[in-house]
Image 1 (cartoon, rainbow, N blue to C red):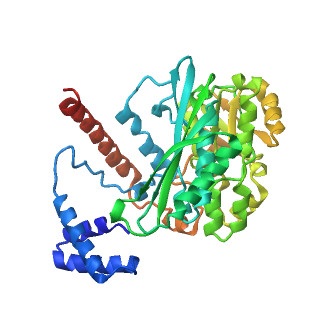
Image 2: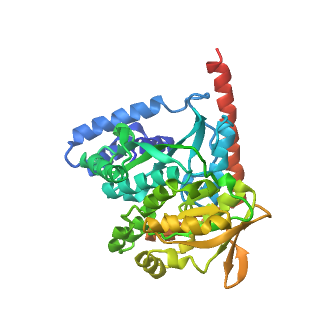
Image 3: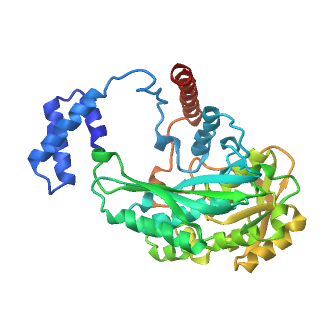
Length: 441
């Protein structure tokens, strides 16, 4: 419950200060039953004062140009067409900085060259629906950020964490979350070296909601970025049991037993084996099947590399953990549009057998699932011998009861894209004004 936002809406609607304070007092008492009505009213009045003091401020330092499109209705964070479009606005704001792999390439991590080697950095946010399951949140976000380092052909050397818990959240959450991070950290011998702990919204957000992220740093001599994908390559994919997304699907759809299937290090072990093998230098690119599932990842990879990627559906189902596959079938969740946390390797066909052998030595099954050809930057799917478009949907597959309800967009997508792009352009212009007016003195 964001009492600051509630107050802004209340006052903007023309409600009197006294009435707004009474409404806010009632909300505070409902969330904090141990506080007195007198304290709640005093807090409400203080919030009103702060909101009034910060309402109506103008200028670059205090206001932004709204897009008129909300995060939810555009699907930002939902790993679909809207999310991908929003992320493609970042390069125009950040601009080229001379990186080896930059944000414009939409890769799993960024890379800069230093001292003759590549330094890789990445960060992943914990799954928002794992707020009530801190250990799972910490475990899966750590595994996710390490995956993003490994698929760049890098060896992870350090982890960093951030955790925010709302005002009424139990302090134990920050410890359980850290324990989840530390479990992966210790198992993979990658130290957790620093972090930050804060409350969500300080005193303004009531409740126990938790959010956070884990970042990782790695080093590499040979990069396996998406842009290296080339016509003639084949696609190899490992088995996958999912991570935070599948755990969330299991928890909120009545399949808690499936969560255990996600507690493994198969992906990381397979990656370690490849890093130690000579065949690593023959691999062109790697990624993890996460962003909108295979639909999203191959589409993004094809666009970045400027070629066509063709995926054969036939071998895919056999690469999904049986318990996870059964749950997806029962819940009618498209396995091609949901995060499976499988390793996808793109390499010349002559290297495929050795790559598969090395991965098998780590106890992980890998199969060939497709190939790369010249042509337009798109992705195709072969189903029963017929080739069809293989595109990301507006959102990733709806994998919880709530997502099945909200998996729709009533506004015209092109109209929303234009609004979002204007907002990104406005941010670019503001950045340039701030640099000129404040930072060039």
